[in-house]
Structure formats: C-alpha cells, structure tokens
Image (tube, rainbow, N blue to C red; front, side, top):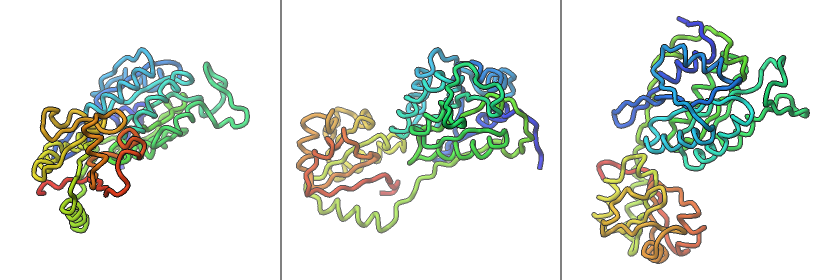
Length: 333
C-alpha cells in the first residue's frame, strides 16, 4: 500500500480537494473552497496547508465566523446541496460563533462542514488563550456545543483518526435525506502532527446520489389514493428543488388537475402565474391555499416534511383527510 507522509491538516486539505458528487450522470466538485478566520487554533495547521498549495481550493477570508458560516449554508442551498464551502475557525468564541449556522443547516437539511480549532490534545500548554476550563471534565471543550446541532460530530485527537472522521463526515454531507451540519473539531497540536496516509484515502472519490426507485406496492397505494380523492391538493416543498422535480410535479398536477400550494422552501419552483398555483400555505400562506387545504380530502406532500408553518401546527388540514407523502417521482409516470 502506497503512503504519503503529511500533517493531518495537509491530508485534510488534499482529501477535501478530491471529493466529488455524481447525480443523474453529472459529476460536480463537492468542495470548491474554504472560508476561514485564522487564529492560534488553526493558522499553523489548516492555514499552513492552504498556504503551501498543491490543491485547487479557493480561500475566502471571513470577517466574522457567524456570517461566513451562514454564507456557506446559503451557498450549499443555492447549489442544490451539490457543493459546499467548509468553514475554519480558531478556538473559543471563534468556534462557537458558528453554532447558530450549524443549527440552521441541520434544521433545513443542508450540508455544512465546520472545522473549528480545539485545545491541545496533549494538554501540556493548557490553558491556552480563550480556552474555557471545565474542572469537572477536562476532556470537555467549547466545541462540545456543536454536538447538539450537528448530524455528525468528531474530535480528532490522533492524526490517523482523520480517515474515519472524513469518511463519516462525507457520508452525512452527501445523504439526500438526512444531511445537515458536520463538525470535525481539530486540536491545535494534532493539526500539525504527521502520519503516513494511504494514497487511496487521498485520491479522487466520487459520492453517488442515486434516485431511489418507487416499489410497485407504493405506486399502487398512491394511485388508489389519488383516484379516490375528490378534492386533493399538492404541497410543494424544498425537496422538489433539490431533486429537480419541478417539471414532473407540474406535469402531474396538470394531468390530474390538482391545485398546488407552496411551502416556504418550495416557493418559486412553480410559476406564480400558473392557474394551479395557489401560492403559500400555512401560517405564512394565503387564503386560497389555506381554504382549499382545509377542505382537501387528500393532501399530497412532495419534498416536504410538513413542519409547523406548513400545517399551522397541525390545525390546517381536516381530520378526515388522507396524507400522501411523495419523495419519489418516477421519470416514467
């Protein structure tokens, strides 16, 4: 097995630079750049690796950790979750400034990778600048705050742990159903520690976002519900955008003459002037969608989780209605 000796940070940069995502036959570079604000927790680690070069990542200088993190979340959303910009910070307040963005990303199923610096794994220089000391548990640091708002959290306390951490991070970041924020906390000393990394870990890796086919039994049940409905309504969510299914959704609605209501995340997917588009539904919706939604006997949710704003905290739809959630749209339907 061929290996290359690199610091943990150098290996991280090389790994991120070689991640790609494939969807419907189109391959996209998953990590195009990195946001960062350098301080004592990351400047001689990730900062050195980025400055050294040998990669294709563009560095974006942040001015405030929360702002750059929220910008990275917005970027991933606008790229339909097919590209991300990780965020690097120092330790202490610099790291915790990114917690809000992680909560936003996880709540909205948006892939987001944070790489906060952390206190020394060896504990010899403790306490370092801005280190919060927890005397009941010396293994606890402020980056533990990310655990409650991330789908995956890992603290890399040995350079070889980077490999399992990165693979698990990518597993979550490329999951179309359960993606969200990922935090890889990086102690200052470990960032600069060297290890002989296998070349296959550093090589180009393509993650495939395959469309899950609908089963015949699912299709039969859905068909029966639609056929028996007298007053159905379609609720269009953000998942329609991520799966590029807006054209299919509209064809389905036009074929069966079913009105369409929009969630906040689904806004703008269907032309607002289309005669079947009722506009927003729920707490922030309009009267047309809410009246028709209230009286509907079948609510067909496409790419939506039916959150409280959409359902008016479960008070909008009548208790006798059926609910059909469609997160799979076959191409030959």
